[in-house]
Length: 473
Image 1 (cartoon, helix red, strand yellow):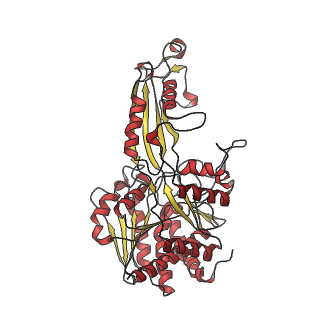
Image 2: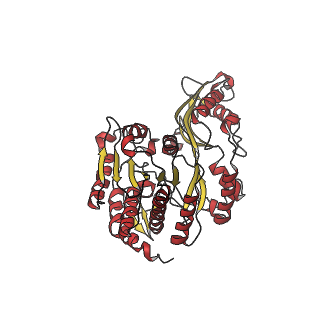
């Protein structure tokens, strides 16, 4: 599709200024503090924030106030305040910290080695979600150049999101007076179902991460001597997981882990299934012959967005294959990742899971479940008519297709925080993480064309917000 004339200025700004700066940002291994405990000493997070701040100053918006805010012992945030003509306030959120490297990058590609190919910018953090602050500035510049009114805009960019945003609440409290009471929150850290239209995120699942450890011996012994007498710690772990998950279907047992799916979310899932078709599952790199479970498209969407699901994401106590001798191992530790429905309280689910796994252990084995992260999900408040209309008009204008809504299967802890902090606000949670963009994995990329059109859509929404504010006034 040819870019509409009104967005050509945005596209040029992306090509001339944003993409070159993102290339330099990708080179910075600004891993989130969970993955780089020595982040203060290493200085990469500070380098990423300083890089973004320098770019913002070089593309200064008249009247803006910019500050890197640092609370003791916490990752910094970048705060930008831009005055507006409307009486409303818009909070635009993004982050600059990154996931770790991950193996499996294509030859010639790498997490800290930016590479442009076929309109995509490869490298860690560009799409998740380093582009956000640059996109926000492009939005405001475009509105100013087009002489379109906008409300007061606050841009908040944190550096702890990939670790669960545990530093963010302190900043929300410390900066409360400066942020004010936004009536629109724009989060640029989500996904899109395809690259053909604007997508809004309707919900996010919660997350419970923890380590299940099963001990049967004080030291390893010869498997030929002990097997058949000493139950395997791995088999006991399997028995314990059976209490939670049906291994044949993946269904999670227990009412505390379940939530009723709102009718509107079911309707949105049906609409998304009709638009996306088999791309819902074909976007994943299945090995030949592998198929999804189940196969009904609407069910797959709701499984991914509103139903609990378990993944074993790590293990300890298992030697590498070349070093595995005939030893009955003393213990097995499995790292569990349990995705929760958006409205299930994560802490309550964590306590229930700990009790479920630890009570009455098979054969009297020593069993312990330690959970490190219990993050609530988020379900969007009812969308006001002005925002629905603005999204539809923006998507039609810049993509030629209607806007779509769909839940996301991942967890973005800041959303629950912002939802609780600003209950009066409307939310537009969107992003550029579409098919094959592979956030957190190898070969992550930013789809540049989609990012340009998304920028134009957000600009239209902010203009509509200003118009709505004037009508209210």
